[in-house]
Image 1 (cartoon, rainbow, N blue to C red):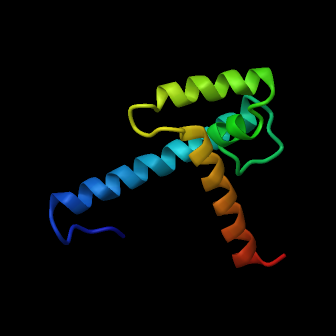
Image 2: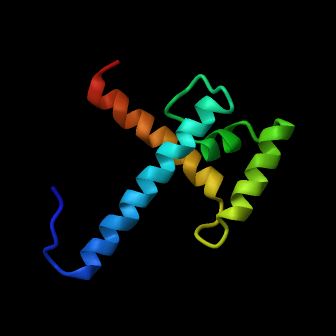
Length: 96
């Protein structure tokens, strides 16, 4: 269980990381449930970047990148890279 050891700063870091994990999970859920993805571990942003050559996903990428522009530039590309990294780590931990 998480506990405060260095004051408010650690709590805000923990909260930010938690919100980011929840957002990532929701993105994956939306990608599977609403957009019928075959890959339950891919985020909506990552898929938008990977399939950006298709009209629908290219528009999604532009809209998502614009939405997250204040927080980070090239959000969809970074999400795609994070999805690949997570998949690589999973394979290393679980064989194959």
